[in-house]
Length: 401
Image (cartoon, rainbow, N blue to C red; front, side, top):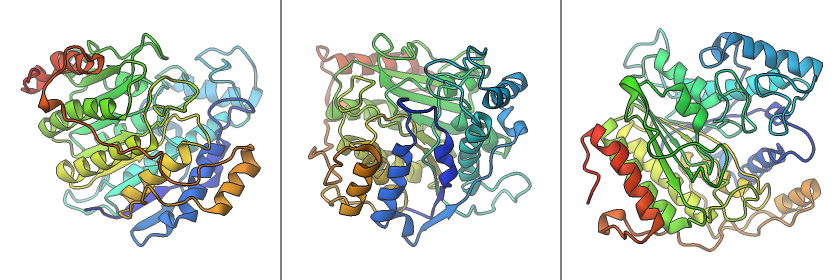
């Protein structure tokens, strides 16, 4: 089962560019859209492309402080180094037009969100124009209320969730599959029980941002609604998917979200130069299918999906996100399909790299369910149990098998 997909895209989104040598190179997004187009994903009968507008200051300030937004605007005009608010660092160097480019990324995710929810002033039973909506350039999940962080200036997933809540959504689930902890989105809703945030990431002892332990569960009314699965370096497809299956479906089924928002950073891949997990494109594709199915099971199909991290610019990002768009568009791409020769030539001309010849890494994407029994000697199973013990009781679930 699938449904209409809206993709918020404009080539101007590639202007979110920290400059030569920065890991978050916009070529990864451009090559994704080129590959998706070359394989016919974007021309499918259920896919509609929309051109977004930049988020307004008022929309940005639902998540970010006014003086921070003003500082970002100044930074993109003056290009002054060593600014406050986390700007001008090696992670977040200033660049010309920083505010405008960042606001467009946020605007793309907002535009996507608006297509799957009736919005302010609409009748409660009004049908949205799409079931699924994608903002592949989005997923900038580290940005905080008063600071840039981890290649992220404005936190577009949090801004979109804030809009969904203001438009009448009562329960929104956010699932973050990036290798880095989704700390900025978690922080935006840490005391809000209307938003269940779940982040599966490499353990903070070995990776930025150094947060996201299982004991970080929210505060006040939001206690139990922040969920963190901290996985050891070296976790592969089968064990990562086992952890996902042990945590995400049971919590979502109890929470009963009206909208599912997911961030699909693909830096969990074994080739990613900035992290230490061992997933494949095939394992990442399996997680995308599982999230798609959960959106239909629990949210009447309402699914907002974004990109995120991913720094294997040619080998991983374009294939993984093309699979994501194809799944959301209702016409999945067969893993064994060859990548178009013209696309490979484009990738070589832009990056000098030899692009993959097929859409698969040759892995199965299979796993053994945690319900089959816990192995106390397995570090991933122990990580699963730490998370289940921390939050399951808050939702009336039993942590132990």
